Image (cartoon, rainbow, N blue to C red):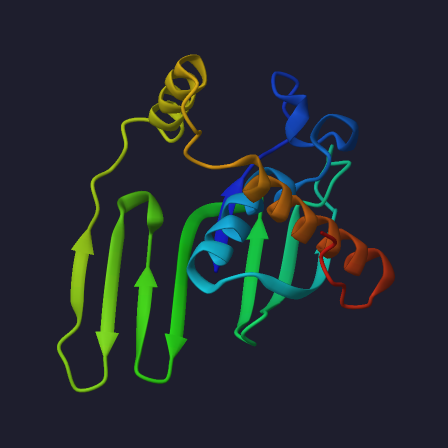
Length: 180
């Protein structure tokens, strides 16, 4: 999984680079969605390792991070995120014994399924008008009507525990298990 974007020090949005306001950098602000996607597609995460850098001017948090995750089913996942690239990239590639699912760029909704001995199949998913607007509108409607929310808070907590394990791994140099 790869995500590349450019965020500079921005006085209008200090939460992007401030440890106190954001809780983290590239992983906390952008990578959380990718960790969530990993859990959705491949299952729970058993262990995490990470390395990062914080060389961008004005960043108190990491500007680039490489996270290695292993699922409970022993699938290996590599997640690379940088907030210092002038070339945007958001894609993933899942390869297994009988085929491959390539998504990218995700902002265009393009998915390609390749299977051994078959022609590749490509789909383009409809693009949302705004990245989060539809989800937020649905969430507000459900909260006001006392209906279950589309994504339970436990999902967000599970993702945060995985990110905490990545930050602990970065600090200790040792793979970590997410807490529950």
